[in-house]
Image (cartoon, rainbow, N blue to C red; front, side, top):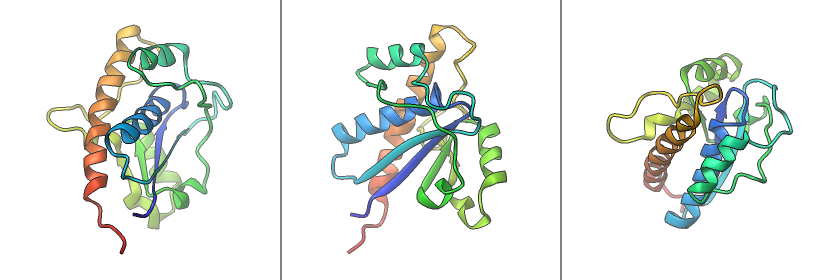
Length: 161
């Protein structure tokens, strides 16, 4: 099966997108080891380049068994639009930023991450940065649901022969 490359994008790459990266890595290894995935995350802004995820993000993730300690924030690069098969934005503002920067032939790769969540999920993963600790738990709830939907979607992709 060909490797599928997934990039998660939020504003600063210290809360939502590294959470999604860590959750997908963990759940794919546990629940879909047959999938060949490359997973990364980036920010549309360069506020936190080189920094680890927010301590509250790391703590919330760790409570659920996700280790984000090795991740470091980076900015979206123009090469990412060619490198990744799916570029998943956490919210509409970042999706708009991606569409402005992406070459036209790559626009079909750009989607909102929560499109993969089943049921009555919101369209956007809210930014927990300025909120209370419950915001980080809500992000994890949404990310876990969307990740399971994404894994189901990826299992349905045509396989190369």
